[in-house]
Length: 120
Image (tube, rainbow, N blue to C red; front, side, top):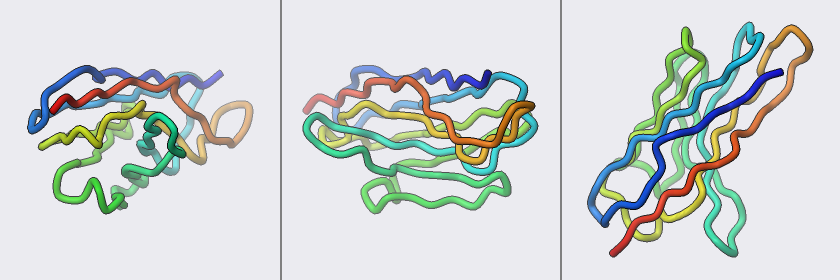
């Protein structure tokens, strides 16, 4: 059984920073892509940033220049450093692991979500 556990969310003021972490555990051989998505109240879930096992990254326009995604393949962990946070960044942030090769299957997984609230 593969699980994703997120941490690092919280309440900050505009302009401050947060660092999210997501660790995948279980009988994992490899993970193709790891990333972060977010969902604000009344809105659809949207991509924030993703990173491949080789280190290639892709960011939403709203995240470019402010957020940095990174991963530690040995630890099956992905990070999201968020700087210069804005109130519109307020959302539940979800970790995603796509193409997870485990002893049982190859599939995608989601974390339970972590709340990020940015006050003005």
